[in-house]
Image (cartoon, rainbow, N blue to C red; front, side):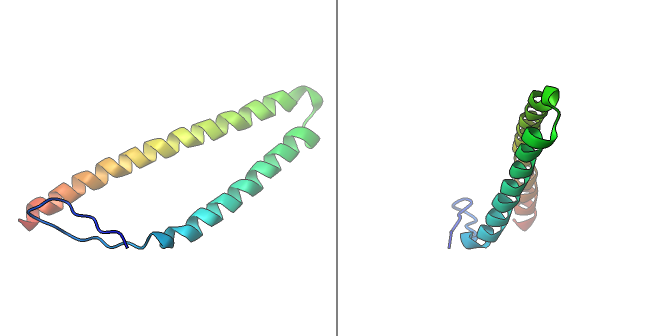
Length: 93
């Protein structure tokens, strides 16, 4: 269990079990393995010889764009949740 204390005046304990995220991470990892394997197989065996490099570069660019969007999503989620928590704390006082 993780205890999280916001500040000295209003100490709120947030006990969250970290193991609830294991199933989500395992399923995302397995789906990523299947997706990467399928894209490699297509790029090496099914694509025309002249387009293999193009397909591999598009695949790597799509992984980079997905990583960027993930970072943007996490940043926005953190900012929105911090804003909402500050509003909730103001109304609780």
